[in-house]
Amino acid sequence: MHTLPQQLANGLFLGSTYGLIAIGYTMVYGIVQLINFAHGEIFMTGGFGALTVYLVLPHGTSLWLALPLMLIGGALTSVLIALGAERFAYRPLRNAPRLAPLIAAIGLSLALQQAVHNLYPKATSPRTFPQLAAGPWHLGSIRIQAGDLFTVVAAPLCMIILALFVQRSRTGRAMQATAQDPNTAQLMGIDTNKIIAAAFGIGALFAAVAAVCYGLRYGEVDYSMGFEAGLKAFTAAVLGGIGNIYGAMLGGLVLGLAEALATAYISNIPGMQQLGGGSWASVWAFVLLILVLLLRPQGLLGERVADRA
View (cartoon, rainbow, N blue to C red):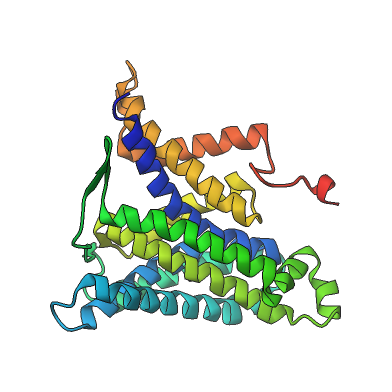
């Protein structure tokens, strides 16, 4: 039990990253009912975009000075790829059967992986990500790394900014109207194409922030990192209630906590030592998802269709 505070903190840091990625899934689904399975790779390209910015800076540049530029570079990379995907891959298929954009998303995911694999030097192996020269700090028995601190500050800050944007800005209100009824929103003068593109862009922006958090926390980025992270973030979005922005973050936190606690403690249960390693973390995440969906199919903060109607 003396390690419980540290494991809770680890789950919080991990879940915050999942939540940031999950927001992209839930925003796009909430507006166009599309599961963008390429979102994990958009997250990955944000990490490589941030790393590229750092590598082109003069040697010896302090990471504290480079970090804002890395965030901008990662965000631009992710947002441009997401906007390109929406315009050329998804928009032409918007009125097609639902299976068509799903297959397009999977194809785009593989294409982005191979693009980074072929274009980025030595992307076949993890690339070292720069680390902040600070910490670690101790809060009681909790050990906090600089990357963890960045994550736990960035995640709630992004959520607050997004909440204010959606609730108070004209574009945010147009997003709510488009999500509720895109045809009526278009009749009322809302350019739904721009609103959908904005949803893709905002989701990609959050994914880029998550990618920098990932790099600072684990010290590396890899061209294949988007697959597992994207899958878990999608799980978090479903767990919280697909289409609910706050549910996406809540689902990410619950998933991160469950993964950290299961990995740390299940191996201590007699007869279950084989089931507590890090390789089983994804398994326990999906076990949690199945249990929640059995008890509450709409997710933690989702609404039943009948209630919403």
